[in-house]
Length: 101
Image 1 (cartoon, rainbow, N blue to C red):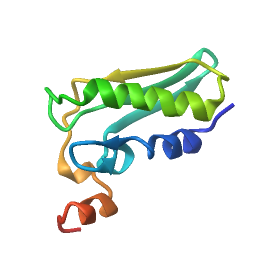
Image 2 (spheres, rainbow, N blue to C red):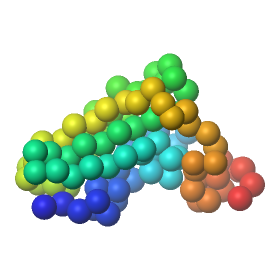
Image 3 (tube, one colour):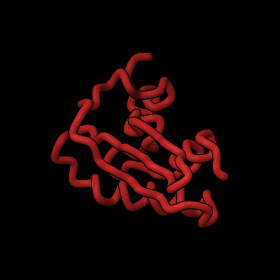
Image 4 (cartoon, rainbow, N blue to C red):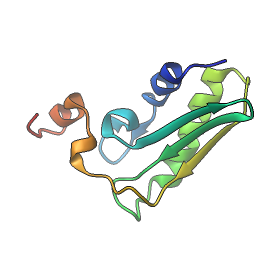
């Protein structure tokens, strides 16, 4: 069975097209769960009306399904809360965006 670390590594392939940074480093991955019945991923968006939410959910499902090699179904949900804030970004994402540390 795929591990949580492998799921996060797969999710690093999903790039937010509006900012050019992967969703893990942006802090959009709220939760990852692995259960006998499937893999569950909860994402938050940088804004509540993010026009990329469907794309990011679809891409997340696609890359994790590929990484899991069909071992389990993958479900991705877009959460309304918590709200995203810049402090969720990794130092490398902040550097890419030109923000202090």
